Amino acid sequence: MNLLRSPLVAGLLRSPMVDYLIVMLQVRLHRARTAPTRGASAVEWVIITAIIAGVALGLATLIQSLVRQKQAEIQTGFNTGGGAKDGGE
Image (tube, rainbow, N blue to C red; front, side, top):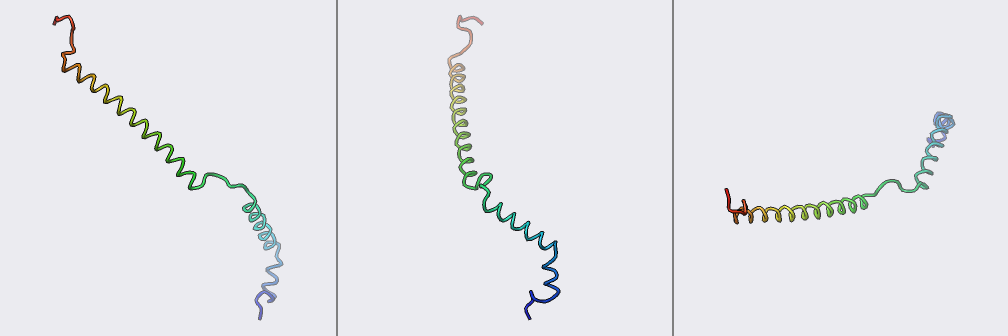
C-alpha cells in the first residue's frame, strides 16, 4: 500500500496549513537562491584581520623605535652629567 494514497495522509496533504508551509518554504528557497550574498565570508574576515594585525605590528615597531631613541637620549644625558652647563650647583 502506498503511504501517500492512504486517506489519512491524503487528508493531511490537502490541509490549508500544509499548503501554507509549502508556499512559505518555496518563498524562502527562492530568496536564498536569488539573494546577493550578505556579510563577509571567512576569507574576507581573514584578510581584514591580517591587515589590522599588520598595521598594529607596524605601529608597535614604530613606538618601540621611538622609545628606544628617547631612552638613548636620556642615558646619554646621565652619562655626560646632563645638569647645569654653567658649572654651578
